[in-house]
Length: 180
Ligand code: HEC
Image: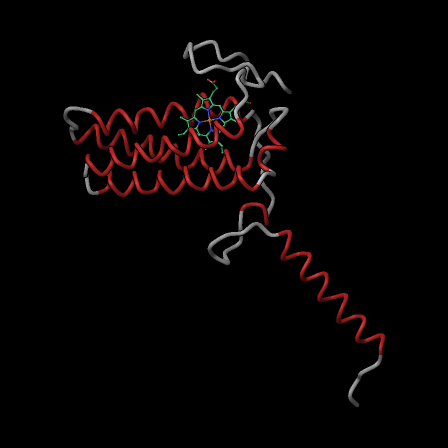
């Protein structure tokens, strides 16, 4: 018998609404592969401010310097590949945010994720340039990379970092676990 009872219809509608709610809550990704947040993961144990200074800035500078270096030996190419890989991985940390007091608010803003995606995409392009040892391509990629840093900083970065961790001096980051 064809079931067209109102209660069945209601159940279908409820299921549809639940499915839509789940879809709406899912992060937008290019593939349908499971994403990090679909499974258990360990929350970041440090702040975005610390990640910026200790990982993003550090590795990005190596990418820029390689782009403008007079010569690059085989070893130099391997080194810049390591740093670009570090920058690529840091992109996901930037996307997730850490335990800084402002982090959660930032990562929930779609513009934050767009700037982070721009940084990640350009880092991938830098890695492609590194793979074929094309220094000019690496330099051009680095020039575009800085636009993602500056764009996001213009939109989000306070004049004084929220955790007080500055780019200079390179040492004296403070205690990265201070917020425990
Ligand atoms: C998606 C946004 C975003 C992107 C992309 C981004 N940053 Fe940041 N960055 C921030 C925010 C926000 C802060 C301030 C953090 C705080 O105050 O807690 C910051 C802080 C910093 C700091 C330390 C603060 C200071 O004044 O010295 C440095 C250094 C830094 N970023 C470098 C970079 C570099 C280099 C890139 C690009 C390779 C980059 N950032 C990309 C958002 C971003």
